[in-house]
Length: 510
Length: 97
Image 1 (spheres, rainbow over the protein chains, first blue to last red):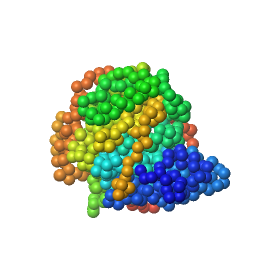
Image 2: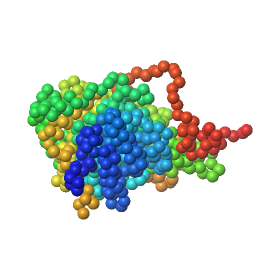
Image 3: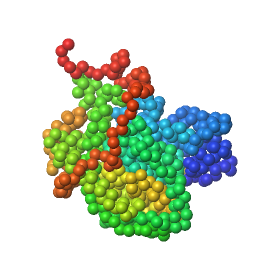
Image 4: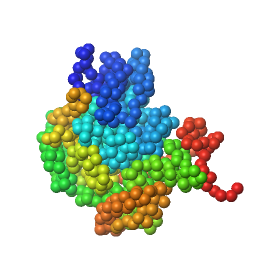
């Protein structure tokens, strides 16, 4: 990252944490406008053009500056501007945003201006956050590399010839590149954790139901969950607390109020801060297919947790090898149903063949609007749900889902969390896996079970390969057991500096 | 289980996709190799196992039966590809008068 100081001798806002920015804005050391302008300038310099990262599909300068001025006016009047006062935030482009184009990185929604804000977005705005723009992703969140975007792949800030991971690739890259300290993504099978690992930032998929899905374009409704990315554990906790909580507009929203994360962060930060916690190592996640450097970094991270007082035990999640097949029945089945709404009638693109009837309009619209991976998954889901095949495929997968969830229930009787690699490899080359869908699906082999079981899962940076690519450690916890994950992450952050390393972007090096 | 070209065409029809010949060929191969992986599940004995629809147990929430604020028609219709008065307009799909 660029030098921490600017010519005026003040700290460059793009190197500061969200917590530090909000504090500075509330104490009038920085204005929200200055903070916003600095981040927009960094985005303009490093994200746009031929050599840019392509993390943002669009920025909203006017909206962001207006929101920043409103925060500054509140501060001037002595009103509470919120815990995220003046903090620039980016949103994966499947969060519905009032008056700001939302495309899901798909041609079928190109040009769509939603008439309302989703709940997570509304909560961010109410907390004083500045929405700076919408972030690149795999089309409709289907993918593990961000290469399925209709608007081009997002490049990895650590090596622009490599992928960011996906589907929330833009959200991960934006934090890694210092474009904004907090972003939101969604995670259906690893779409927050895997890109967080591949770009060296933190990301959490909360317990299913902790964060409202209202105003989030649905992919697989029983698996989708909203979560934040951040550059440090304190910012991640802050963002999660702002967006968490019951929402009557989401029928799957958990009514019980989630516990505060502050005490867990404080506990983890103390010497021997993990005393009393037990971490399980599931043997099915430590397998020969994992890259040796990834395996070594993850094992070293687990030793750090142990030296911070955690008890580490070997455990087994025996149905893990079936997670991939189970996921690739359930997620496409739900997607084929959810994506039926994109039919050219109420919003988005319509393609009308001359003289064609309604069915011809549906077919032409969907054929022109959807990319390959989305079509593949709609087809797979339609196949699995087809009359006569339902019991053999969809129902079978739901039964195996029960077995996978039971595995975790048994393990969590003796553990507070399990630790695994987030991804079997570091970031791969752009184009390396695009020809073979099965190879691409295997990139999520360690993250899928967490969604099937509805558990919270976090990825934290735990080292680098010799080539300088980030590696992620995955921590999974009990339902609503996020506090244990934050305690572990805080203890790890107190003992290592992996999360503090930032990439030097190509143009900065020149 | 391998999937045939005809099955791919039939599923595309059900999913309201009009695939090109090239897409039918490509998807037949790709879906076949995905289904090969998926078919491994059939070896697992799941007799008597309850299916999971949602991982987190939940009741169907109810609310008071009172009208709340709704999106004004003008806002709801603003993104319509084709509108007619206060309606979304679609091509004719019933015959006769």
